Length: 364
Ligand code: A3P
Image 1 (spheres, rainbow, N blue to C red):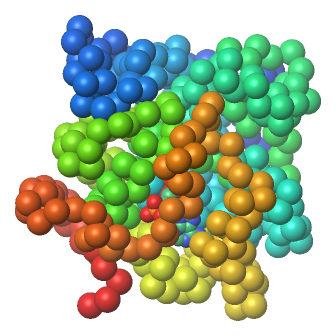
Image 2 (image 1 turned 90 degrees about the vertical axis):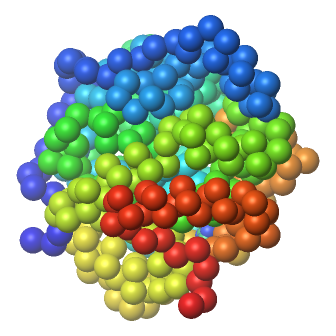
Image 3 (image 1 turned 30 degrees about the horizontal axis):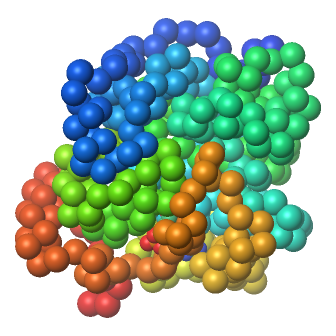
């Protein structure tokens, strides 16, 4: 059996297709007085109504509080492919690769529907306001069709995803930035996980751009201030190293596939071959090439110009677009030498502790 092959067929589903009711040890607390104001003063103008998770101390929107047990107990299926990442580490690229590998017979569909609508970003139900989600016609039509009697406030994405009928060759592709600690400990017994990570300097630069672009965060401070918050874990999804560590320690699990963004850039076909093997897909060299091209940065950026990703309630178009540069090493154009000295010691301390080594440039 291939590394990531499903252990058993079938899946758990309740009436609404969401997770079985169950306990949830995740605690969610409002921020202490003054904490939110401190973050707003630093530049995160969108940081209102926040909570922190325990474990993890992760910042999240207040909606997460009521949703935490639904995420924790979500009924993943053995054939699901979950893309788990810290934000800005290549999630969208991997979603498109996985979708391409499993939809080779209908790649044109990507011209019509953005990847966000061909896969499920389940965190959306905690991250975005319900009113904003309900303005998305596609999301609501799919929700009504898949779960006609369900209540939107119980999670539009979670319930739609839960109710998607199983397909023999087109598994659900589920994106999440939530770390392992916010899911049941047997997550890897219940589905396959592809974990993508990226060097934290480029991830930080990309996250800074994202937080300026998306009004959920509405970051208006300097890059230096953002980087300080990033290193302290005072951003959504918390501390970079905690997130990576939880996946890294599971990297030998047969149902986890660990991928570095930089390796995907350096050796895309080899990486796609390994990924196909993990998924138990027999793809020819020509098919791998087709997928690599379909998910290449230029093709994804070009498609985004025609069918933009609906990212959240609103974005600040003056900041640019989601598909920024898609390169490795751009941090060196943004990070000052003073800041880099700080980042280097932060990186070295954590890389040594974890026994992981990122690539910060593609040459040498
Ligand atoms: P940059 O901001 O450095 O350009 P995520 O999908 O996890 O949010 O990650 C977004 C980052 O991945 C952005 O990085 C984006 O440009 C980059 N990206 C998206 N599609 C890509 C692709 N096909 N190839 C390489 N990088 C890609």
